[in-house]
Structures are given as C-alpha cells and as structure tokens.
Image (cartoon, rainbow over all chains, first blue to last red; front, side):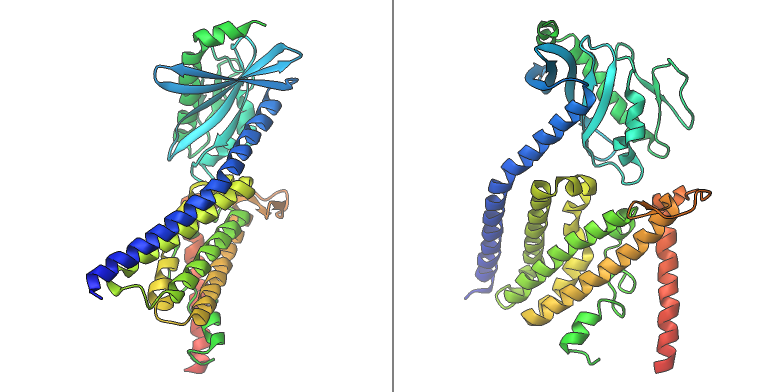
Length: 194
Length: 204
C-alpha cells in the first residue's frame, strides 16, 4: 500500500475510534456530572440560606448574559436568594453562589462551585475562613479589600489572600458587578415579595 | 539484573531511571500539584492510568502505525485516555475532580507519557511495555509522594491532612508556594544523586 495513503487511513482510524469511544463515555457520564453539579448547588444553597428548604430556579436574560438565580423558600416564605455567578479568575472561570437576604441588601455568604486558581494560593478562595469574611457585607455598596491586615469593622472590605491578590480581586468583581446588574432586574423585583 | 528481563524493565523506573529523579521529565505536575500529599497521590494515580493504558494501546498497534505519523497517533491515544479519566472522575469522584481542577486535562502534555511511548512502547512487546509503564508510574508516584510529603509537612505542618508538627512550629509558607517546590525538588535531586554516586562507587 502507498505510504501516504496508509498514513491517512491509520490516523483517521485512530481519530474515529477515539472520538467514538469518547462520545459513548460522554453520553453516559454527562447526566451523572450534571446531577453532581446540581447536588453541589443545592448543598451550597442549604448551607448559605438558613432555614430554606425549597429552592425555586429562575432564569434571567440580561443584555445577552444568562443568569441562574434561586429563591430559597420556607413554607412559601422567601428566606433568601442564591445567585449563581461566574466570571474569569486568575487562570480560568470562577463560578460561585452568592447568597443574600430577601431584600438583596447584604450577603449571607458565598460558596465556590468551580475554580481553577493556583493550588495553595488562589484556590484558598474556597477555604471556609476566607469565605466567612463575606457574611454580613453590604451589597448596596462596592465590596473592597485590604492586604495583609484585618479590615476595619464596617468598612465593607475583606482581607485579600496573600500572594493571590488577583484571585481576590477577580472574585470581588464577579460579586460586585453581577449583583449590581441583577438587583434591579424586572424579574427579580417581581419575585421579591411573597 | 540484566537488561531486557521483565524484572529489569519493571524495576528501572523505580530508581535507576526514575522519571522525575533521573530523567527529569514531567516537571510541570511535579512542581505544581505537590502542595499536599493527597493532591500528589491523586495526580500520580491519574497519570499512571493514562500511562499504562496508552502503553498498552501503542505497543499493541505499534506495527500498524506508520513512523511519520506516530507522534500524532500517540497524542490522540493519550488525549482520549486523559479525557476518559477526567470524565470518570467528574462523574464518580466529584470532589477529587474539583480539587485537581485543571491538572487532570494537563496530563496530556506530561512528557513521561509521550516519552515512554516513543522510547519504549513503540519498539517493545505488549508485556514488556506494560511492565515498563507500571515501573515508571510507580517511580513517578514515589517521587511525587516524597516531594509532596516534605512540602506539606513543612508548609502546613500536616501529613495527609493530619496535624504532625508540634504547636510551636510555624509553617514555612514558602514551601507551598512555587519557589518552595523548586527548593525542595533541588534538595531531593541532590540527595538522590549523592546516594546514587556512593552506590555506584562500590560497583565501578
């Protein structure tokens, strides 16, 4: 057989076989991965919004961006909001849940769903004691940060992760920018009372 | 041990031809993920799976793959197994998959894997290639666990997440930062070199 023809055939065959097997694997792992993701969101929401038992999903279109927002309910009463927010971090996408009180005035806390920040440095954003700083901060004002020291009480700031200022900064802008956009959205306003 | 025997092909990866300590291959994951032992171990296991499976495939089909497209073929085979490992972890071990983040997909560019296909599996029988891949995987695992143990103990004061150092010990933060990886790797390479030289003196 002609050498170049053999090259084409063998390489195409390998590509077809690997493509095919990956398609099969993707087909039956995809639903499981989705279930895992939804479970991670539900667990996060339950921890962040105290008392909430039911979660109602709302999808919002805002100037070309799609957002997913959850209303945390207890006996039909609104206990808080869970915003699924994402944006670019230091290396790749960061995706978080930011939970707020029913009035969307202060944060109940945040949970990191997906991140690929530097291990040991930027990935400290998922650590409990870092995330605890967000509890009670106002979302009516911009949340800022200070380096290497504890922020003044009431300053609406957090302490940045040392050696990972960019990860901190990116995380804050994901929260600040998106909540500002979403807070006044029609669909959120309609759902606020109940 | 004589070259070419099954025992030799397996054992060479552990010490004499250790992929990290001697061949200095796969430095990216070696330096990047060894901040904790759990990360280092999970990385080594995922890499082992890809290396062993790729060696199996490449040695099985070595006679059919034309020389001029061999690298492209190996990369496609390796990439398929990496994606497979990545999807499986995400579906069944969601937490580990979240912890290792981008490093699983990056196994594709680990030189140890492509290096073994090119240097060994493409020229040897399936049995020998599997032994070679297992030896190299174990050598990689030993090096990663060694490096990550020192880094975790010094950098966090823990081992496998268990508190090991006394209360007055102040963690060396530098050890879990990238420069710490270079320091520690340098020390380990130096020490293993000294041991190797001493051992060889008796023989030669």
